[in-house]
Length: 377
Image (cartoon, rainbow, N blue to C red):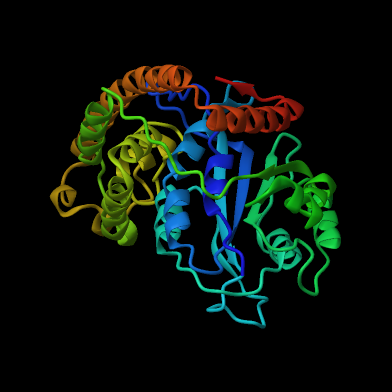
Protein backbone atom coordinates (compact mmCIF):
# COMPACT_ATOMS: atom_id res chain seq x y z
CA UNK A 1 0.00 0.00 0.00
CA UNK A 2 1.42 3.37 -0.95
CA UNK A 3 1.84 6.07 1.63
CA UNK A 4 -0.32 9.06 0.78
CA UNK A 5 1.48 12.30 1.44
CA UNK A 6 -1.08 14.34 3.35
CA UNK A 7 1.51 17.09 3.56
CA UNK A 8 0.54 17.72 -0.05
CA UNK A 9 -2.95 18.68 1.01
CA UNK A 10 -1.65 21.01 3.63
CA UNK A 11 0.62 22.89 1.26
CA UNK A 12 -1.94 22.89 -1.52
CA UNK A 13 -3.96 25.24 0.63
CA UNK A 14 -0.97 27.41 1.56
CA UNK A 15 -1.36 30.14 -1.02
CA UNK A 16 1.64 32.19 -0.03
CA UNK A 17 0.77 35.83 -0.42
CA UNK A 18 0.24 38.63 2.08
CA UNK A 19 -1.89 37.63 5.07
CA UNK A 20 -4.05 40.38 6.48
CA UNK A 21 -6.74 40.65 9.12
CA UNK A 22 -9.34 43.34 9.61
CA UNK A 23 -8.96 44.19 13.26
CA UNK A 24 -9.55 47.93 12.91
CA UNK A 25 -13.28 47.17 13.03
CA UNK A 26 -15.23 44.07 13.93
CA UNK A 27 -15.80 42.47 10.56
CA UNK A 28 -18.70 40.05 10.63
CA UNK A 29 -18.80 37.45 7.91
CA UNK A 30 -21.56 37.88 5.38
CA UNK A 31 -24.27 35.25 5.58
CA UNK A 32 -25.14 35.72 1.91
CA UNK A 33 -21.89 34.52 0.34
CA UNK A 34 -20.03 31.38 1.32
CA UNK A 35 -16.63 29.87 0.64
CA UNK A 36 -17.02 26.16 1.23
CA UNK A 37 -14.01 23.85 1.25
CA UNK A 38 -14.37 20.09 1.77
CA UNK A 39 -11.09 18.30 2.51
CA UNK A 40 -11.01 14.56 1.78
CA UNK A 41 -8.00 12.86 3.38
CA UNK A 42 -6.67 9.39 2.68
CA UNK A 43 -5.83 8.03 6.15
CA UNK A 44 -4.57 4.61 5.10
CA UNK A 45 -1.23 3.13 6.17
CA UNK A 46 1.26 4.48 8.71
CA UNK A 47 0.87 8.16 7.97
CA UNK A 48 0.85 9.78 11.40
CA UNK A 49 3.90 11.91 10.69
CA UNK A 50 2.47 13.15 7.42
CA UNK A 51 -0.89 13.91 9.03
CA UNK A 52 1.00 15.91 11.64
CA UNK A 53 2.45 17.99 8.84
CA UNK A 54 -1.03 18.56 7.40
CA UNK A 55 -2.25 19.74 10.81
CA UNK A 56 0.36 22.46 10.84
CA UNK A 57 -1.13 24.18 7.79
CA UNK A 58 -4.74 24.55 8.92
CA UNK A 59 -4.32 28.11 10.14
CA UNK A 60 -2.43 29.17 7.03
CA UNK A 61 -5.32 27.82 4.97
CA UNK A 62 -7.85 29.92 6.84
CA UNK A 63 -5.65 33.02 6.88
CA UNK A 64 -5.43 32.97 3.11
CA UNK A 65 -9.16 32.33 2.68
CA UNK A 66 -9.85 35.42 4.78
CA UNK A 67 -8.07 37.59 2.21
CA UNK A 68 -10.92 36.95 -0.25
CA UNK A 69 -13.72 39.51 -0.23
CA UNK A 70 -16.95 39.72 -2.20
CA UNK A 71 -18.38 43.21 -2.70
CA UNK A 72 -16.24 44.43 0.19
CA UNK A 73 -17.68 41.82 2.54
CA UNK A 74 -16.01 38.85 4.16
CA UNK A 75 -17.74 35.67 2.95
CA UNK A 76 -18.78 33.02 5.43
CA UNK A 77 -15.97 30.44 5.49
CA UNK A 78 -17.04 26.85 6.05
CA UNK A 79 -14.77 23.81 6.22
CA UNK A 80 -15.71 20.13 6.11
CA UNK A 81 -13.47 17.13 6.71
CA UNK A 82 -13.66 13.51 5.55
CA UNK A 83 -11.32 10.58 5.92
CA UNK A 84 -11.27 7.58 3.61
CA UNK A 85 -9.27 4.40 3.00
CA UNK A 86 -8.92 3.43 6.66
CA UNK A 87 -9.43 -0.20 7.74
CA UNK A 88 -10.86 0.93 11.05
CA UNK A 89 -13.81 2.28 9.13
CA UNK A 90 -16.73 0.14 8.01
CA UNK A 91 -16.48 -1.78 4.75
CA UNK A 92 -20.20 -1.14 4.32
CA UNK A 93 -19.43 2.61 4.32
CA UNK A 94 -16.68 2.09 1.71
CA UNK A 95 -14.12 2.91 4.45
CA UNK A 96 -15.35 6.52 4.55
CA UNK A 97 -16.19 8.74 7.52
CA UNK A 98 -17.48 12.26 7.70
CA UNK A 99 -15.20 13.74 10.35
CA UNK A 100 -16.96 17.12 10.38
CA UNK A 101 -19.78 18.60 8.26
CA UNK A 102 -19.53 22.16 6.99
CA UNK A 103 -18.83 24.36 9.97
CA UNK A 104 -17.45 27.76 10.88
CA UNK A 105 -16.16 26.27 14.15
CA UNK A 106 -12.46 26.26 13.36
CA UNK A 107 -11.51 24.89 16.76
CA UNK A 108 -13.70 21.87 16.01
CA UNK A 109 -11.91 21.28 12.69
CA UNK A 110 -8.56 21.50 14.47
CA UNK A 111 -9.73 19.11 17.19
CA UNK A 112 -10.92 16.53 14.65
CA UNK A 113 -7.80 16.86 12.53
CA UNK A 114 -5.52 16.25 15.50
CA UNK A 115 -7.58 13.18 16.44
CA UNK A 116 -7.13 11.41 13.09
CA UNK A 117 -5.31 8.06 13.17
CA UNK A 118 -4.11 5.94 10.29
CA UNK A 119 -4.54 2.32 9.24
CA UNK A 120 -4.22 0.41 5.96
CA UNK A 121 -7.27 0.20 3.73
CA UNK A 122 -8.86 0.54 0.31
CA UNK A 123 -9.11 4.03 -1.13
CA UNK A 124 -12.31 4.70 -3.07
CA UNK A 125 -12.09 8.20 -4.48
CA UNK A 126 -15.37 8.08 -6.38
CA UNK A 127 -17.24 6.93 -3.28
CA UNK A 128 -15.87 9.65 -0.97
CA UNK A 129 -16.56 12.39 -3.53
CA UNK A 130 -20.10 11.12 -3.99
CA UNK A 131 -20.67 11.00 -0.25
CA UNK A 132 -19.33 14.52 0.26
CA UNK A 133 -21.61 15.80 -2.49
CA UNK A 134 -24.66 14.03 -1.09
CA UNK A 135 -24.13 14.63 2.63
CA UNK A 136 -22.92 18.21 2.82
CA UNK A 137 -25.10 21.31 2.81
CA UNK A 138 -23.67 22.92 -0.29
CA UNK A 139 -24.71 26.49 -0.97
CA UNK A 140 -26.53 27.54 -4.10
CA UNK A 141 -25.64 31.21 -4.32
CA UNK A 142 -24.22 32.40 -7.61
CA UNK A 143 -21.28 34.00 -5.78
CA UNK A 144 -20.48 31.02 -3.56
CA UNK A 145 -17.17 29.23 -3.99
CA UNK A 146 -17.64 25.47 -3.58
CA UNK A 147 -14.43 23.40 -3.62
CA UNK A 148 -13.40 19.83 -2.96
CA UNK A 149 -9.76 18.90 -2.38
CA UNK A 150 -9.07 15.17 -2.32
CA UNK A 151 -5.59 13.84 -1.43
CA UNK A 152 -4.16 10.36 -1.92
CA UNK A 153 -1.97 8.25 -4.19
CA UNK A 154 -3.74 5.06 -5.13
CA UNK A 155 -5.54 4.64 -8.46
CA UNK A 156 -8.33 7.19 -8.70
CA UNK A 157 -10.81 4.70 -10.16
CA UNK A 158 -10.86 2.16 -7.33
CA UNK A 159 -14.15 0.94 -5.87
CA UNK A 160 -17.61 0.28 -7.23
CA UNK A 161 -18.66 3.93 -7.57
CA UNK A 162 -17.50 5.67 -10.71
CA UNK A 163 -15.48 8.82 -10.04
CA UNK A 164 -16.79 10.15 -13.34
CA UNK A 165 -20.39 9.92 -12.16
CA UNK A 166 -19.51 11.35 -8.74
CA UNK A 167 -17.75 14.32 -10.30
CA UNK A 168 -20.65 14.85 -12.68
CA UNK A 169 -22.91 15.10 -9.62
CA UNK A 170 -20.50 17.62 -8.11
CA UNK A 171 -20.59 19.86 -11.16
CA UNK A 172 -24.40 19.88 -11.12
CA UNK A 173 -24.12 21.56 -7.71
CA UNK A 174 -21.42 23.93 -8.89
CA UNK A 175 -18.71 22.16 -6.91
CA UNK A 176 -15.20 22.11 -8.38
CA UNK A 177 -13.09 19.02 -7.68
CA UNK A 178 -9.34 19.45 -7.18
CA UNK A 179 -7.05 16.44 -6.87
CA UNK A 180 -3.71 16.08 -5.10
CA UNK A 181 -1.61 13.09 -6.11
CA UNK A 182 1.12 12.30 -3.62
CA UNK A 183 3.91 11.13 -5.86
CA UNK A 184 5.34 11.44 -9.35
CA UNK A 185 3.33 13.69 -11.67
CA UNK A 186 3.25 11.26 -14.59
CA UNK A 187 2.22 8.40 -12.31
CA UNK A 188 -0.64 10.52 -11.03
CA UNK A 189 -1.71 11.18 -14.60
CA UNK A 190 -1.61 7.48 -15.42
CA UNK A 191 -3.60 6.70 -12.29
CA UNK A 192 -6.30 9.15 -13.43
CA UNK A 193 -5.93 11.88 -10.78
CA UNK A 194 -5.47 14.51 -13.46
CA UNK A 195 -8.49 13.16 -15.32
CA UNK A 196 -10.49 13.58 -12.11
CA UNK A 197 -9.44 17.22 -11.81
CA UNK A 198 -10.06 17.89 -15.49
CA UNK A 199 -13.54 16.43 -15.27
CA UNK A 200 -14.16 18.36 -12.06
CA UNK A 201 -13.07 21.66 -13.66
CA UNK A 202 -10.51 21.90 -10.90
CA UNK A 203 -6.74 21.68 -10.66
CA UNK A 204 -4.43 18.67 -10.53
CA UNK A 205 -1.42 18.79 -8.21
CA UNK A 206 1.37 16.39 -7.49
CA UNK A 207 3.61 16.72 -4.47
CA UNK A 208 6.95 15.16 -3.54
CA UNK A 209 6.27 13.11 -0.43
CA UNK A 210 9.78 13.79 0.87
CA UNK A 211 9.26 17.54 1.17
CA UNK A 212 9.41 18.65 4.80
CA UNK A 213 7.66 21.67 6.19
CA UNK A 214 10.05 24.57 6.47
CA UNK A 215 9.24 26.98 9.24
CA UNK A 216 10.64 30.49 9.16
CA UNK A 217 11.02 31.97 12.61
CA UNK A 218 10.43 35.70 12.71
CA UNK A 219 11.12 38.45 15.26
CA UNK A 220 7.34 38.86 15.60
CA UNK A 221 6.26 35.33 16.53
CA UNK A 222 6.70 35.65 20.29
CA UNK A 223 4.84 38.95 20.42
CA UNK A 224 1.98 37.57 18.33
CA UNK A 225 1.76 34.50 20.56
CA UNK A 226 1.68 36.69 23.68
CA UNK A 227 -1.20 38.60 22.09
CA UNK A 228 -3.05 35.33 21.55
CA UNK A 229 -2.79 34.48 25.23
CA UNK A 230 -4.17 37.93 26.13
CA UNK A 231 -6.92 37.52 23.54
CA UNK A 232 -8.22 34.41 25.29
CA UNK A 233 -8.93 36.48 28.40
CA UNK A 234 -11.49 38.52 26.44
CA UNK A 235 -13.82 35.54 25.90
CA UNK A 236 -16.90 35.26 28.12
CA UNK A 237 -18.27 31.73 28.01
CA UNK A 238 -22.04 31.29 28.33
CA UNK A 239 -24.66 28.57 27.96
CA UNK A 240 -24.36 24.80 28.04
CA UNK A 241 -21.52 24.83 25.51
CA UNK A 242 -19.51 27.64 27.04
CA UNK A 243 -17.13 25.88 29.38
CA UNK A 244 -16.47 23.00 26.99
CA UNK A 245 -15.86 25.28 24.01
CA UNK A 246 -13.59 27.58 25.98
CA UNK A 247 -11.61 24.57 27.16
CA UNK A 248 -11.33 23.36 23.56
CA UNK A 249 -10.06 26.77 22.50
CA UNK A 250 -7.19 26.33 24.96
CA UNK A 251 -6.59 22.77 23.79
CA UNK A 252 -6.30 23.84 20.16
CA UNK A 253 -3.86 26.53 21.23
CA UNK A 254 -1.77 23.78 22.79
CA UNK A 255 -2.10 21.60 19.68
CA UNK A 256 -0.82 24.47 17.55
CA UNK A 257 2.04 25.07 19.98
CA UNK A 258 2.94 21.38 19.90
CA UNK A 259 3.73 21.73 16.19
CA UNK A 260 5.84 24.88 16.51
CA UNK A 261 5.69 28.41 17.84
CA UNK A 262 5.46 29.58 14.22
CA UNK A 263 2.33 27.48 13.76
CA UNK A 264 0.87 28.95 16.93
CA UNK A 265 1.55 32.40 15.52
CA UNK A 266 -0.45 31.46 12.42
CA UNK A 267 -3.33 30.36 14.65
CA UNK A 268 -3.11 33.65 16.53
CA UNK A 269 -3.46 35.52 13.24
CA UNK A 270 -6.58 33.47 12.47
CA UNK A 271 -8.02 34.39 15.87
CA UNK A 272 -7.75 38.06 14.91
CA UNK A 273 -9.84 37.65 11.75
CA UNK A 274 -13.55 37.56 11.01
CA UNK A 275 -13.33 33.84 10.25
CA UNK A 276 -12.81 33.06 13.93
CA UNK A 277 -16.26 33.73 15.39
CA UNK A 278 -17.75 31.95 18.39
CA UNK A 279 -21.16 33.52 18.97
CA UNK A 280 -22.61 30.17 20.06
CA UNK A 281 -20.57 30.25 23.27
CA UNK A 282 -18.88 33.65 23.62
CA UNK A 283 -20.90 36.66 24.81
CA UNK A 284 -18.66 39.17 23.04
CA UNK A 285 -19.22 37.64 19.60
CA UNK A 286 -22.89 36.99 20.43
CA UNK A 287 -23.47 40.60 21.44
CA UNK A 288 -21.60 41.86 18.38
CA UNK A 289 -23.93 39.91 16.09
CA UNK A 290 -27.25 40.62 17.79
CA UNK A 291 -26.64 43.74 19.92
CA UNK A 292 -29.05 42.12 22.34
CA UNK A 293 -29.05 39.70 25.27
CA UNK A 294 -32.80 39.05 25.19
CA UNK A 295 -32.49 35.40 24.13
CA UNK A 296 -29.94 34.52 26.82
CA UNK A 297 -31.36 33.15 30.05
CA UNK A 298 -29.95 34.38 33.33
CA UNK A 299 -28.85 30.86 34.20
CA UNK A 300 -26.79 30.70 31.01
CA UNK A 301 -24.68 33.69 32.01
CA UNK A 302 -21.36 33.11 33.77
CA UNK A 303 -21.74 33.14 37.55
CA UNK A 304 -20.02 36.48 37.93
CA UNK A 305 -22.69 38.13 35.75
CA UNK A 306 -25.78 36.42 37.13
CA UNK A 307 -28.01 38.77 39.08
CA UNK A 308 -26.33 41.87 37.64
CA UNK A 309 -28.39 44.65 36.00
CA UNK A 310 -28.51 44.41 32.20
CA UNK A 311 -26.77 47.75 31.88
CA UNK A 312 -23.84 46.50 33.94
CA UNK A 313 -23.65 43.25 31.95
CA UNK A 314 -23.57 45.13 28.66
CA UNK A 315 -20.91 47.50 29.98
CA UNK A 316 -18.75 44.50 30.95
CA UNK A 317 -19.20 42.87 27.54
CA UNK A 318 -18.38 46.11 25.75
CA UNK A 319 -15.22 46.54 27.81
CA UNK A 320 -14.07 43.06 26.77
CA UNK A 321 -14.99 43.85 23.17
CA UNK A 322 -12.89 47.01 23.25
CA UNK A 323 -9.99 45.08 24.76
CA UNK A 324 -10.30 42.39 22.09
CA UNK A 325 -10.34 44.90 19.25
CA UNK A 326 -7.15 46.50 20.53
CA UNK A 327 -5.39 43.12 20.72
CA UNK A 328 -6.63 42.11 17.27
CA UNK A 329 -5.34 45.36 15.85
CA UNK A 330 -1.97 44.69 17.44
CA UNK A 331 -1.89 41.18 15.94
CA UNK A 332 -2.90 42.60 12.56
CA UNK A 333 0.01 45.01 12.52
CA UNK A 334 2.47 42.37 13.67
CA UNK A 335 1.10 39.85 11.16
CA UNK A 336 1.83 42.17 8.24
CA UNK A 337 5.42 42.60 9.41
CA UNK A 338 5.69 38.85 9.99
CA UNK A 339 4.50 38.02 6.49
CA UNK A 340 6.84 40.58 4.94
CA UNK A 341 9.74 39.00 6.84
CA UNK A 342 8.75 35.50 5.68
CA UNK A 343 8.45 36.67 2.06
CA UNK A 344 11.89 38.26 2.26
CA UNK A 345 13.49 35.14 3.75
CA UNK A 346 11.89 32.93 1.11
CA UNK A 347 13.24 35.20 -1.59
CA UNK A 348 16.74 35.21 -0.11
CA UNK A 349 16.85 31.43 0.31
CA UNK A 350 15.64 30.77 -3.22
CA UNK A 351 13.14 28.19 -2.01
CA UNK A 352 12.16 27.10 -5.49
CA UNK A 353 9.97 24.15 -4.52
CA UNK A 354 7.75 26.18 -2.24
CA UNK A 355 7.79 29.12 -4.62
CA UNK A 356 6.77 27.02 -7.61
CA UNK A 357 3.99 25.36 -5.67
CA UNK A 358 2.81 28.65 -4.21
CA UNK A 359 2.61 30.20 -7.66
CA UNK A 360 0.61 27.25 -8.99
CA UNK A 361 -1.83 27.28 -6.09
CA UNK A 362 -2.17 31.06 -6.10
CA UNK A 363 -3.09 30.92 -9.76
CA UNK A 364 -5.73 28.24 -9.22
CA UNK A 365 -7.41 29.93 -6.25
CA UNK A 366 -7.32 33.36 -7.83
CA UNK A 367 -8.85 31.85 -10.97
CA UNK A 368 -11.78 30.48 -8.95
CA UNK A 369 -12.15 33.78 -7.10
CA UNK A 370 -11.95 35.84 -10.27
CA UNK A 371 -14.77 33.83 -11.87
CA UNK A 372 -16.96 34.67 -8.89
CA UNK A 373 -16.01 38.34 -8.74
CA UNK A 374 -13.96 38.19 -5.56
CA UNK A 375 -11.22 40.63 -4.63
CA UNK A 376 -8.05 39.78 -2.75
CA UNK A 377 -7.07 42.09 0.07
